[in-house]
Length: 140
Image (tube, rainbow, N blue to C red; front, side):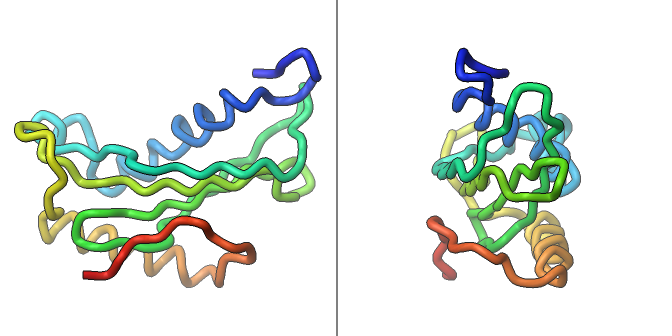
């Protein structure tokens, strides 16, 4: 994952955020079974900020939370921390709920929306995010 400079290459930041966020999406209900039923989610916008180098041999500690949502979109914020708990990178992703038969954005079913709402509320109880966000979703 490291480049000639001895730090994590930019291509691997997105991969790391993607791989480690999968358990969050699976816990919401975006599973293989849900895909088989004809639904999924697509990332439609990403923002990654590199704050401190992650050097070769360092352990990465990813953390994620649902920051916001509406009936079609979910705003997920992820961070990579180093061993000292220092912020190394910030990721923001907007994902859209997709009808795979039409390959179009559609409203989430109420059961999924309620799960997103509950997880978001749980995440927000941990306090405010201590850095500025660049992305957002409109409330409809």
